[in-house]
Image 1: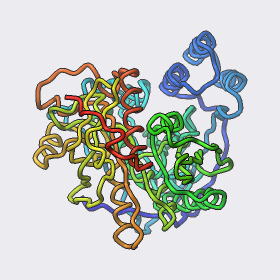
Image 2: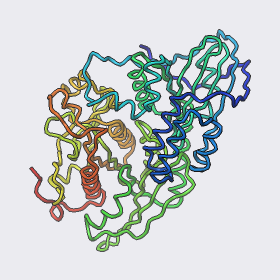
Image 3: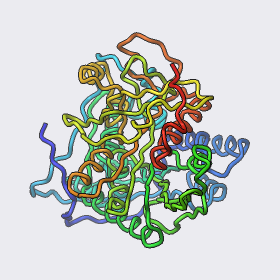
Image 4: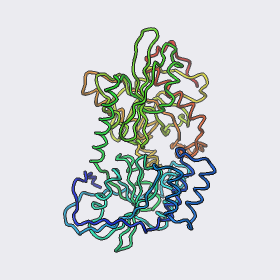
Length: 498
């Protein structure tokens, strides 16, 4: 299949919009909203209030208008979903249009590494949406873009006819996820349309989830204009941060752990101050830790990245690239990864020795490798130092065929972001005399290769041991800090746990 992206820069004429609040919310959308209320850890409700609101959401006798008012009163304006229906008339057009990509149908005949794929998909798209896609044969479309451009996207998707566009409630709009229900008023065909942040990996992830639920291909496309706009916003964020501080190190991952571990890893270092940079775009936050070496007097600034929105795939690199400059000493990426190596198990820590993307070897060195042998005294899992780290767009990609291909390439672990970040740092270092250090550590959270090894595992992406994961995260931060702070190996290293 030929892959063509487009920027959505043109408009169709002849479209009229009319607001109509009389359209009933699909029941599957209520089902998913109820699940979000129960599962979300960021809404300000106690358990009893959650249960009460969930019961009201699922009660068909409570009108949508009443539900909207109650949700607004309990959750505040930030969660005030407006039930919105727009009637859209499109004139038939003959202009050539860019292709919309199709996510391949999920191959149910090939075994998959996910322990219970139905549950995995339901937990990510919603149980109600899963059942609607599976039983009602809804068409499914994923757009990597911006919700405010929905009218333009509709014009591009459909060349003619009359359509009703209904916005569905979602508590994750702050994360960049918006849901719409589209009905062709002439044919009666219904479409589920999701807009997610403009990451190719993220769009493919959701499109494949929809394909699994539908047992048929779904469609997706990426708005390159939206991704370019996101890069400009990330550039503005970095400029604002750098106007306030000279940034020596920037780190992505486990930002809440770093401050406490700085003095723990080396008593010569202390945190002089910390400051959060407010007013940034895209829901991004940076916390700047100013640290000082008591012996040498050396003072440096460490920028810790956090975001309200989902940051998936190449979006990490988009936020990181504006910091690459002659002033920057290091980039650190810490994250979760899946094991493709027999000795590498959930909650072990992996320090990759090589990075690979599809068909490409990344030559960037992982600076954490120089700390070979370090082990926390109370860390009962293994630190694995020899892994070749690969790239995947989603765990849903990891069927038996994919696993065999990666194992033939001696890939020991995979995730969605790390190799892309390594690639961006390598590109900068190749083009500039100033060399930026790259630090990478992974916490293993699942073991896809268990499928081929015929192993049984009690931990996967939906069955987590949070205590073990927290200890592994601390280990990852300590390893990264030893590299960032250039702690001497002979002072800090313990024997490698076997």
